[in-house]
Image (cartoon, rainbow, N blue to C red; front, top):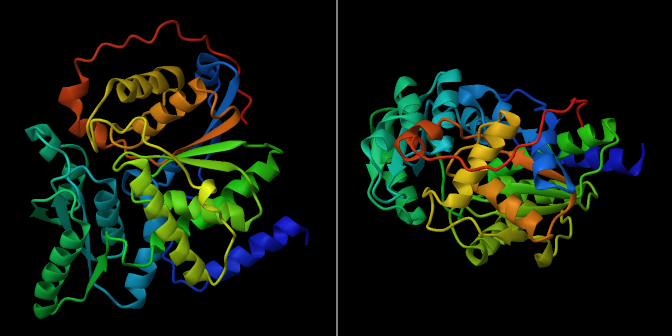
Length: 363
């Protein structure tokens, strides 16, 4: 075995200590975005298609849920509880996973986005959760993770008194980030794909919301000896607050896996340049990124997470903070587009001259 193979073996062996429920279509594709690269000029842009993980319209949460549902099955749970924003992708995929495994699902929807319309509350992820037969609850506060988790525990106790065996997927930071394990495994998958194609990636850009995907990728890459720079784009909180969140996840992962990959604080790269005016709220840069990616690549982003992340990537390229070979990690979330239909339908695209089609040979 060479040094990389030994590192991969060690990481996978450590992950085997945690129960896992296979749910995702893996590996997900790694594709070149040639027309978008041409439009940006001077960079080679690639995309990791975790919108193609399959279950319940896919997305990054499917990888995470494999470890939560592994634990739920180990505990013989028959009901899963989860909390998130009204247009949360996590709750939608959790409901799909629950149905796949023959479980009930209770979803708590938090009021994180101000002044939403009726379409936002009835379409997109909300509609899909209803079709899946999930029981929906409401939580009136949007930035109260401890309170939202406490309310889930109240609902869980009610279900337990009714003879159910509930399992809670927690929101707050006082819990082990089981979902991040899915992205340590994803780092192994990525490095395998890069090695097979003799492809070098210099920078990886990913959404940093709950932080599990960001922390898992960074931990996994460093554990494998990769020095790919990872930048998280903040769609929910400012970069300073997110820094503390990622540090907390990394500390817990180190304890969970009994392994320290030696990540320094300066390696936690974050930007909140596309955050304003706040979580789930559109801005011009986000709309531009959403439209440009669709019209260059036929690839849909969502207005809450991935479009803001692509807007952040555009900014970093423009300011020469990242260059050469750049990987955009597509975390999915497209159903939320329909919850923002009224806000997007009348927006006029002003994208300038788009590049012509080129032959695609893949990465």
